[in-house]
Structures are given as structure tokens and as C-alpha cells.
Image (cartoon, rainbow, N blue to C red; front, side, top):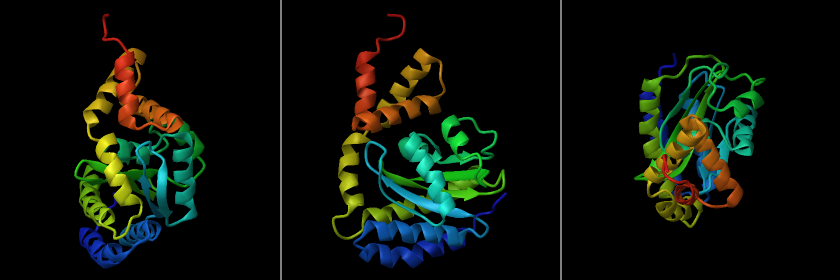
Length: 238
């Protein structure tokens, strides 16, 4: 089990604080953050940061290694995976062993040949607004647990605040405005997931994947897609 060096993570935030607060290019900012995460976790094969728009499409991303680029590319091509789920739900997602985790079958199959077994992804949230998520990968199983998630949540909260206050008119500030409307109520998304789960007999993860995919295809937001579903699907028993 990987023990997260909280002092190192805190120091990493402090190191990049000045840079992020004066950085006008969001691509540079997320690259700095991804590298800081990796350097703070010795033994990790890579880390990445993704900022997303209201439909779950990446507006900016950074990866410390080609392995992370491949893992991330598969997620956004397929519209499913731990990073997208962390962003959409605003919660930490942990994969203890990718070989046995079945929540994202298409993504799991696509990356099966890559040397990754454990994953943890934490959302970048400011208030109730989700800017994106970052993720860390390990070649060994069982490297991350709930304590890992709690520690990373604290780091992610600070990092998200820094990103949201980047000077200039880059993506995070624009996204913060649009996400106020599109992600104002996670209850709407959760209700839509519940409807799909009841009607189709699927898991919450699979229901969320359907909503994300519909949003990506239509160009609508998750909340808009969820509201449309709620008006189309009659109550159970009707």
C-alpha cells in the first residue's frame, strides 16, 4: 500500500502556488500540477491532470508520461473510465486492481496490455463546480485505498482553487461560469442514473457512462441530458 507523503504534497502545492497564480496559460498550469503530483509520489509510473467542459470533453490536459497519455486517450475516446467518473460525480474513484475491476469494461479491455494495476482519480472541485480531475497510476495492485483518497482530496481541493484563480481569461475561469449552470445540481444527474438503473437493471457506473456518452454526442451538458431523460421516462408503475 502506497503511503502518501502529505508533507511532500503540501510542499508541492506551495512550490507551484506562485507559478499558478501568475500563470496565464492553463496548459502550462496543468502540466506543472501533473509533474508536481508525480514527483511527490515516488514509484508512481505517471500522473495526469484533465480539465473538462460541461459535456465531459477535455479542454486542457497534461500527462507526465506516454503511458498516462495512452490510458487517458482511451478514456475520452470511449467516454468511460475513472477520471470521467471522478469528474462527473465529484468523488474520488479508486481501482484496487484493474484486472478484476469491472466498472468500465470497454476501457479495461482497451488498456489491458498496459502495465497498470492500481488507479486513483480525484476531482478538481471548487465549491460545487467540477473543473476536471487528476489521476495517479501504479503498476502494482492494491496501492490505493480510502485513506489515499481522503489525502488526495485535500490536495485536489487546494490545487483546484489555484487553477480557478489563474490570472487571465483561460479555460478554468470560463468553465467555472458554465459549470455553475450545468453542474448546479448533482441530484438531477443522480435521479437520472437511478431511472436508468431501474429501467435497464444496470449499475450506477454504467448509467453514468450512458449519460456522459449522450452528453458528449449531443453537445449538451450532463444536467441537460439528465433533465431530458426525466421528462421522457414515465414514473415506475405508470
